[in-house]
Length: 82
Image (cartoon, rainbow, N blue to C red; front, side, top):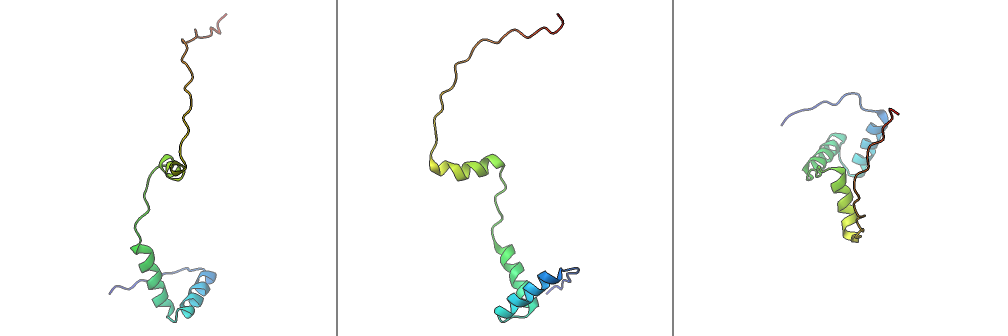
């Protein structure tokens, strides 16, 4: 088994870890191991773009068909030289 040292941990974070470990009846080291194991055993989040994330939330609600405006011929560009 490998060892790991974590330095510069905020005192509040360390206190929370100590309390959570006590609640679970474990040492802080065992609690930290369990937190890491749990966090790293999850499937990685899908990395899609913003459009895919929005579509995933909105698509189940249904869609709206919008009328497409008729196209017109292009206008002549404005001549600012006059």
